[in-house]
Image (cartoon, rainbow, N blue to C red):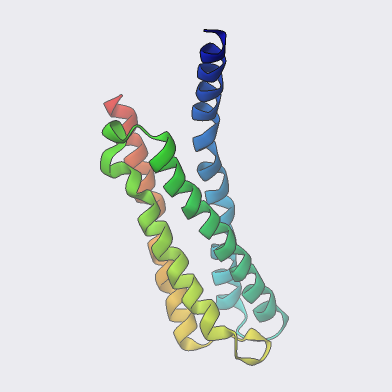
Length: 148
């Protein structure tokens, strides 16, 4: 009997601490992606272009972790009956990661990782989706809070 009580306590701790990973990673990842896009707009070549490329790479890596934890939060920790389609927040995150990853791949071959027009177009599309995702995320969070 005592071991089942301990198991319940551990399960309760995991359930309360598990979903906290995704909300912590998201602002850092999306901040890095936004910073990289801003650096590309300001300077198209030189040291800022190089810095932008590596900031973009770090943002994509962190956003990939963020999308993975969003998926794990939805599958493992959410009560799927209550969260339903609201748990699909990872889909736009994956689309943002794909757009920015395409921008990185287009810049790998260029000297000093200078941004090309097609890479900049992918970054602008990713930034637009990221801005809409932030707004939609706030709306979804508000509607979930209202339902409870």
